[in-house]
Image 1: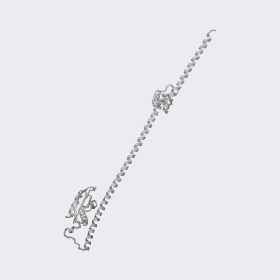
Image 2: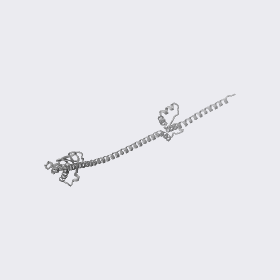
Image 3: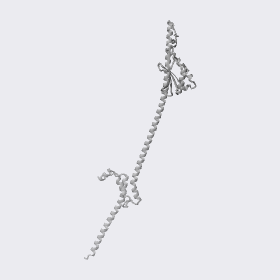
Image 4: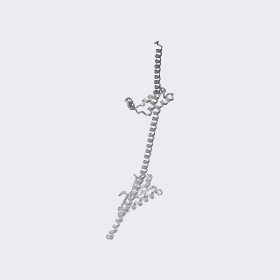
Length: 297
């Protein structure tokens, strides 16, 4: 029994309520797509008009199928289009529908009748091939359209990933530069602190009145502590083994300050000692001379 337009109309209204956006008519025999209908493009048409278009197309396709009844499948898809929401079987008259009704078309039993029958068969086959090719072409166009959209979406996501990767690399580079700058600043501060900690006692000693020839530096103990604390193991070994000793500038400055403070004072003390000893010797000689003059001959 052929499908009625009222049945198709009721089904279209049901799938509209299910938020269907696309209808597709497929052949049940080979599952080939015959024609799609986008409901968004048919907003101005009611369900009856859409159902009439679907039935007309199915009846036209049925004439190309050499059967009494041709069956088609009508699918309804949502926006994603991956799984159908509902389907309906459409049954229409095929190319041999007249034979089932007892109106068999007769051909003359002659060469003319044979040629007519062959031409009719070739015509039916040609219609079937054209219908199949058209449905394949439409299916291929739909597939190309979906693949193109997927490709555009993937390209857009790929660009976003590359942009995010560049941002991460830029942030990593900035963080590494900041870390190196902080390490350099810390190294500079440590260097300055080390120099100041070793030279500060020298400066304070000069401010407090110490210096060359003063005898005892005011910060002599601190300078000795700084000097001995700055000596490395290799420098200490070289000093104990009476080997050449390599000192840095800060150590040389401390030694020079201590040397200036004590050396000149020590030389003055030695000179005073020599002078005192010479004076004593002279006094002793004078005393001996005076004693010899007073003794009678």
